[in-house]
Image 1: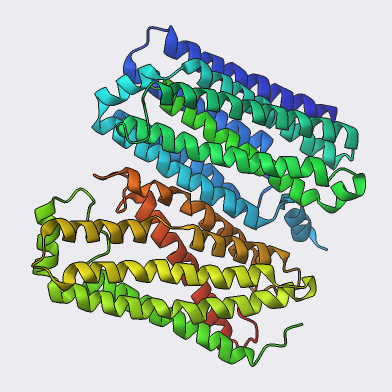
Image 2: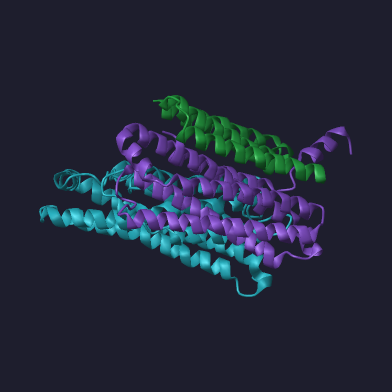
Length: 86
Length: 193
Length: 241
């Protein structure tokens, strides 16, 4: 139980950290426009996957749903980044 | 029971498959929102740059933080409910509601600011997407918050928690979905240049 | 407790009505009148008037067939209410079943009214173009915007489906969740009157038309397949989980 709770808190720290990184990157880092855009989107979908895996506990789900969730994350991430890079 | 059945039991989620199908279907609608936003951004780049510059990143970031924390509380509440720690569960549910309400307060302040600055849903493509997509997301927050509030008031004793275990899990899932959709919306609307 | 009639005939009524609605509405709206997929709200006055002048006869024919077809949604939805009422029988007044039936009437009316408005626009095509455009807009706003009748139907079916704790519920539980999702998918339609040109929320848009129109059709198609499967297996229930 405590292990579980520690892990949940660790994930929260990671999520907040990633939010901070993408916020700082977009406001102060001197990255190129497209590089910055793609990295912010990639970070967002990393966060999404963290939430799905650790908070929604996707590992306990039956296989088709798990495939659907992973497909959503990678498919939507790919499609959004592709549309952004057009 | 043979080994295959064992395996099946381990893999099975305590939540009904239907809840997952609902959540996946809802996520697919939002995937279309993301696609429409990115496509419109491609068609009207200047309008989107100008529109994004008028947004207040502070509001967006604050809401992201608030929602991420609320998701943590919700996940912990579900774990507490599984462990039958009713006191902890009730406290975490209350914290979730506080965070969710904070999100709505910030959102209202943000909308008020935008509307009093003269922007509205039909101003241009950027504002159409901004108001409609964040608005639909806000409706999801309100629905989720209603379910969490229902948990607080109607599922409070350990018998009720045990009898409604899968309902609690389902509400938790819905709340996490609301959270993860906002994570993408925040990055896409506020941050991506 | 409602003791229903012969279930088999009810299931047949539902299946046949569903088929007639689909064939007549799709035939009338998509094939003959060409009103679906909807014309863009961004069409100019001349374009709208030409649409009616050039397709005068096919528009009136198609719309007539479509509104006849829409009427067959009523038996279908009321059969749904009959099966729902059995679930609710122990709770006293079958609120959700009655609500679903009444909302079906609303859905049917708001789908049928616009066809008459467009028919009126096509009725005297030589009249002032402004009036034709006005009728055209009125019809489309009326067709695309009101979604609560249908959304409430979805909610009622979903709620009763989830309340159904029998070993063989009247629809599979995942269909109930999908019904609730259908209701949620309708939330975009009230935005229709804001957009006069185009875009995803205009009346021919991705969310107002393609999602809001085809997701219920998808759900009903699944239901139809389940019913067919059931009739073939000689089941007495509407569908088997």
